[in-house]
Amino acid sequence: MYPSSRFVRRGGALIVTLTLALGLAACGSDNATGTSETSRSANATVSGHIVGAGASSQEAAQNAWKAAFSQDNPDATITYDPVGSGAGIEQLASGQVNWAGSDAVLEADERASVEKTCGSPALHLPLYVSPVAVVFNLDGIDHLNLDPDTIANIFAGRITRWNDPAIAATNPDATLPDLAITPVHRADESGTTENFTDYLHQAAPDAWPHEAKKSWPLSGGEAAPQTAGVISTVSGSTGTIGYADASQAGTLGTAKLKAGDGYVAYSPESAAAALDEATPASADTADLAVAISRTPASPTAYPLVLVSYEIVCQSYEDPAIATGVKAYMSYLASDKGQQLAADNAGSAPLSAQMSTRVRGAIETITGR
Image 1: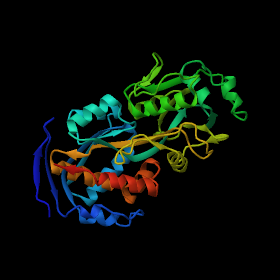
Image 2: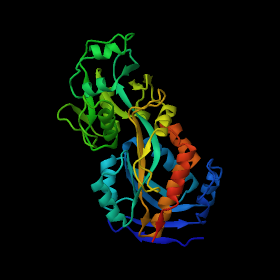
Image 3: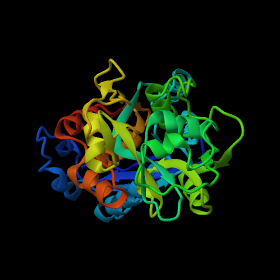
Image 4: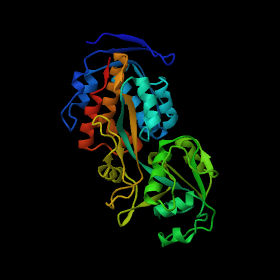
């Protein structure tokens, strides 16, 4: 049994007591199918307050994860504030939270700030994989085929009406209204925006010359804060179009995107197919950042996939923090945790190969 450990967060006023009733040695498993995952939660009980903040795309999944983890660990309190990727990273860099959720890989300056606070490398754990939906609000139309050039020209303000020939060309059976298009983008710094602009830049570079970034690169247009704000704005007015985590699309119309020789709808399966074509973005085998191809060869791979990370320190100054973060991340990476996210947020569970890599990276988290 590990002793109770009390600590004060130096970057803020957080006071936590963290107790591990039984050792977490059982968390490490070479079983790719995760048959030991249920026993992990039963054998290890964490108490105290574990704090995270970041990507609003993860909100539905985090709500499910927090509730289930707390059922297995009734003395534990998990806090996750869906303030957006940029704000979450800032809070991690300033020592206000134990981990950050981010829909994009840390930029060089962000990594430097986080690692200075950590006193160790920062790890990207890809624990939430979800499509980003291009959502729209048109009466009587549930789906449209939209190629990347058309989407780029809509959001750049060059295509301004729904019956434009470019939209009609890929939707010959749709009755498109002669109605103004109102594009809606995120007002805050967002990993979802970075994924969306990365998609546009990679798939339609002539129409969208802007590099991928967390903040919207163009002036003007209608803006809304966080995922909920975009969905609310698009839902509130006919003729609008926006982008948001697919789990929040609700009853809005959604676009099928160009993939290979056809168009593919978002789904957990099409998101997983896109992740299979991803390439590592880091030479560090414990840092699992990936680069997604936005022009997949497979017609079953949805190209606008958001790989949302839990960004953690590889080493924490206080072992109690390391224990809490490691226990929660292990739960998120478990088969049970991944299925919870799929059931409650429509995300794509990790493949067996990626799951093994993520669990291996989590095992490197230590206290000092």
